[in-house]
Length: 317
Image 1 (cartoon, rainbow, N blue to C red):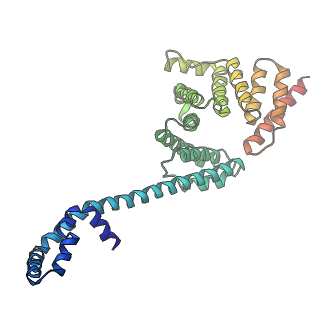
Image 2: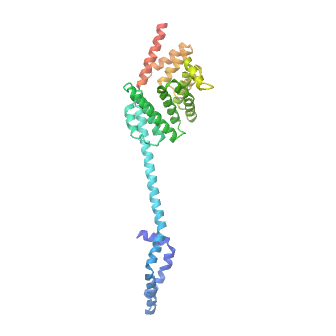
Image 3: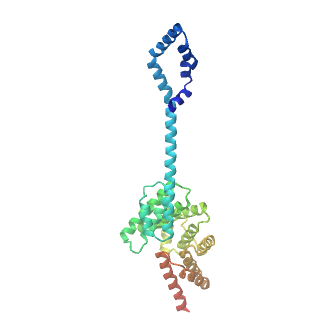
């Protein structure tokens, strides 16, 4: 009945065919008037098929609009639910990452490996890489995971080129793959890696990790062996190069943005000062790296390396 009432409001021509006063006069009039009413009624009844068709065709646009509204509202609800679902997954993933639950994190995110969400995909790239670096991962599995991580990072970047994290992890994964493709490929990718680290810093100047990674890039090319320099000269008119001073600048900048955020940044500050023959500052930063709370296997490895370098100081003294 409610739907019929809606049709009546939206169909002015129907009210003209069946005006209220006109119907009431037929019922209340004399026999002759009554006959007149019946005659008009029979004319209407005779055209009932066309009236029904007219009603139907006039109702269709209204029905279509209501249906559109229903489906549009359903689509909005579905999209909202999907966004909330992704946010819940990301919150859970970040909790597992901060807790050092590498394997659980990987298991969680691989359930959504077909996702088109950039935030989810770069986290999956990071998780794949972290699993590859576990001591219990075989060399064969490690290689598969490294290439898998690159694919996830690439997809994340394709989905959102404005994501600083997608740029950062794409560069990291390209660098990792270079370990399996030889020195020539690794050097050939050097400018691509640098470009994405710089883009990550541009998009988020407060991300200490991206700044730290630019420091690693500079440190790597500051100490590149002579034979690799020759390969670089064959590949580029201007081969990639850097200095320990540049590397040190990035490591300090990262520390200023987020103090003690990463044990490896502390270690590399110490190692860079060693390269610059400043043993006092080298010892200061290596001690901080050694005393850094170990949350991951990498932290433990860095503690060991820092302790060994400090022991070397003692032996020489």
